[in-house]
Amino acid sequence: GPPRPPPPPVGSAAHMAAAAAAAVSQHDAAAAAAAAAAAAAAAAAVGNGPTNLAAQLAAAQPEQRRAILGEQLYPLVERHEPSAAAKVTGMLLEMDQSEVLHLIESPEALSSKVQEAMAVLRQAGQMPAGAAAAASEGVIEASE
Image (cartoon, rainbow, N blue to C red; front, top):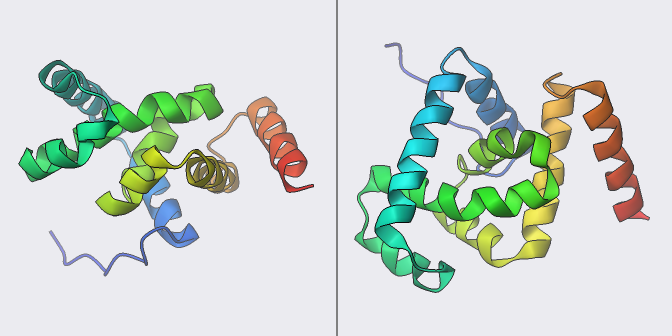
């Protein structure tokens, strides 16, 4: 295809918006299904907690690393945003691997990034109004 523009800085709002736009494309359902299948395969192959995560990633093929990270990240994101967990997890997995590892290890960092991702989704009009209102109330309470 045509040459792609350089990606925005990792973790920036623009980067997350680009990831959201990519996730929303017509490949969304197929990508989600493939990611779920890969995550299930990774879970079956792995069976260990996050303690060995760095070692697993080092041993894994590059295309498997995203599935391994997603498998660890999804349940953590689901606690914050059950209605948008798959979409938010996909957005977070667009970040650099070391940043994703940090999110898995740091509940505070994860919470902050999940809120950021939800704000991007709301701006992109991807969230139902009720969920957006509930999410924004959570942001207001957290910032007080």
